[in-house]
Amino acid sequence: MIQIKHLNLYFGTKQVLKTIDLEIAAHKVTALIGPSGCGKSTLLRTLNRMHDLTPDVRIEGEIEVDHIDVLSPQTNVHQLRKKVGMVFQKPNPFPKSIYENVAYGLKINGFAKGKIDEIVEDSLRKSYLFEEVKDKLHEPATRLSGGQQQRLCIARTIAVHPQIILMDEPCSALDPISTGKIEELIGELRKDYTIVIVTHNMQQAIRVSDYTVFMYLGEVIEFSSTEAIFQSPTKELTKNYVKGHFG
Amino acid sequence: MNKTKARVRINKLFRFLFQFSGLLCISILLGIFGMLCYNTIAFFTKISPIDFITATQWAPSSGGDTSTYGLLPLLVSTLLVTSGSMVLAIPLGIGTALFMSEYAGAGMKQWLKPTIEMLAAIPSVVIGFVGITIVSPLISTLFGLPNGLNALNGSVLLAIMALPTIITISEDAIHAVPQSLKEASLGLGATYWQTLRGVVLPTAAPGIIAAVMLGMGRAIGETMTVLMATGNTLAFPKSFFDSIRTITATIAIEMGEVPYQTTHYYALFAIAFVLFIITMLVNILAEHIANRIRQFQ
Image (cartoon, rainbow over all chains, first blue to last red; front, side):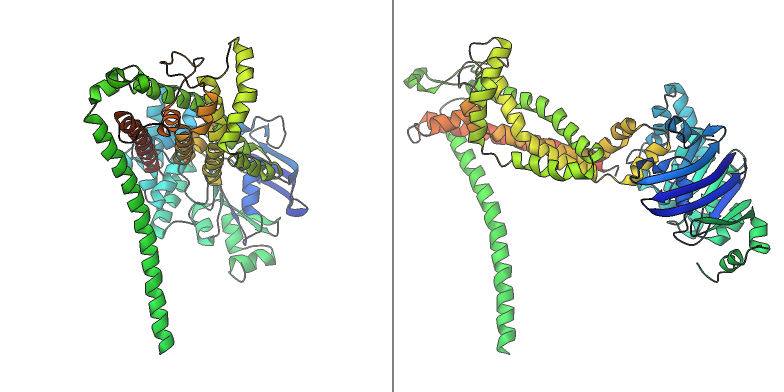
């Protein structure tokens, strides 16, 4: 689904990602783990070209998502981002109503008005939020709890029918119960979407992912099935990290 | 021991000073309001409010019983020149603010913003000069008018005066929109323009409304520029190409010559009261709109 070849990324003169080669499987959950500053969020954000906004960034190598050359300047980045949705670290609902939050992506992508109501409801159902908000769809989204807001952000993302969902530590600002709900949701979403999730929480990686990528100082140290990474890592560094010796 | 006492006393003294300055501001405000009300009521004991509102002529100096005190030509002049200035200043101001906040590089913004703020430091008399010597000849040539001292001229100048306020405060509001909201929008496939229109501007709206209201407040209350540059004709204006005389200009021109406590004298207070009510309504409306938007944030 996603092929990354010889990816190098520099912020100014500082190299943040070093010759990364990865192949991410369709309809699986792939977790990116590693200590802070190892480049996992940076890697995630190259997949939907979020670095376009950052000044002074230089990217070399190739990324292919569903036969789209992601890094090519000719690529329609808006089409790409529709295909590769993103859920952020802190819930970031728009200062609009719950309904408008989900409808936003549909409106900008020119969906027919009649279709929007239906898709909004469907997306909210798929993110396990509909029952909680069905009576207050037109109330401000900011009145929801943090966990609900994050599920709303997931609903907003899946509303535009992406193929891939990138999640950048989606539970780091949430309490354990909300985290549990999001993880349950990820388990449900994997049936329809390819998910790449950055997480600080190794237990979470074990619970939700099929594959795990361990990164350290901008390099991919080990990439294998989640079970293999946590049960029988081949590299010493991986072993020390997953056992909690550093991080 | 003595030192402690002194400290307590100083503490009390400052508390008193701050209390005093706070109360002083409020009493000055109430005092002005009371003075306006008192003189306005005095005016309405001589001229009926209905005549004041419906008469289409402001002719106080025609002497004795024949003078009329019609608010309308002055009010329409003020509203005409202010709305004209806002039509020019709002899109230009918000556009400049968007450019500075979202498109201009850090280097450019660094000199652009102080320069624009400097525009606010130009005295209104100087803007009046500009109106008489540059804008008004330009208008008369451009539209083939015998005289360019008209409402349009006033609007252009008031727009120039309102711009720095609108730009700086809007820019602050736009700049304060969290990056995470922009990313959320872009992440859904929105273009930068869709993001600005759909997320950035609505989120910054309370601040932008405040900016526009402050700018408008300046335009409504401005006296010297409109006095110098709009021709000061007491006729009922029919278009932007007519010379006008605003409420403020009328007060400034006539207050110096009017005999104390005559009907004419009270009439000037009455139109000032109207001006005060307009500004207050504009502020209340703006606050109301901003609050409605804010509840989503």
